[in-house]
Image (cartoon, rainbow, N blue to C red; front, side, top):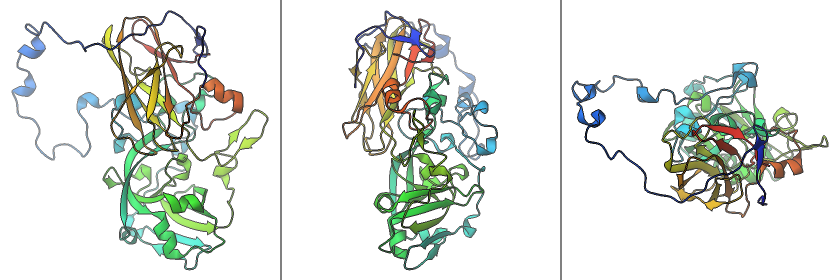
Length: 422
């Protein structure tokens, strides 16, 4: 990891600025003149009338004052919403758990609506006994609960050639983190009896796209789950109800939704999603294939373009998320000046392998412009690279596996913009 010694040059693609602020943390402000503030002195309407009773609102309805916290799409990214994506509002969330209704969606043929009593999962191919499981059959195996992130390999993909999408939700919002309940895929494969020449599995979905991905048998026998619940409740239809595959730490396209079949084979199948798609095109025209693991990554979620600084100068809290497909993230660094000076952030909350990690950094903002960045250090010693370091190795042709450091420029008024530093 290199650090620049000279002044950063940046724009929306390369933005030029200088004289950036650093500072130490101080006690957060509050209203000293509470006496006379009608917001505290007056009896408000909600304290004078009875509210709604139980069963008055549909399940999961947030406060009317939070109804802007929703998944959002970018219409020009895809031609048809049936095969499209929307994004998790990372800038509106805290902690590490993504609420079920805010988890991003990626579909290739729309949402399959599967009647659970008609659901079946087949295991066939190089096995001693081809077998079919019902949903109730699956629930009779030993259950496990694991908190994992799911990230699309195309997350941040529009940024390979420069700053494009202006918002944390749109640059990094193809990731979510939930508690999955399910059974180890290993138990099902053992019940079918994998033959000695079995080396790979092919996971197939029941939706109209018949999504398939090849997965090494070693990974399938290690930590893959066949999951039927998320955050304690049944999977949402858009997340693969009634059953999906969970492939911890690996790209989201492999987490096949509406899972209907596992075939065991002796080599990878080289289907569409691992040949023409989900390979990393290099500058010389060759492509990296089977780049399954999601490398360490982080992003500052607040402040960011959709979450500007609105309180003015003074005590300011920076927060963000970090994750790695290879383990935990014990350390995140934060810079206020585009990488000239780095400070260690405070990690908070559970630290679990292949899960999101929450970090905070508090400082006293004096109103001068900021160039905010974060960089993650994972438990293997890997350090999140800059975008230019990635481009030096892989060029600008790819749309997958961009884990480069993200930069937000914050102006004197607290508004933030997506820029790059070189």
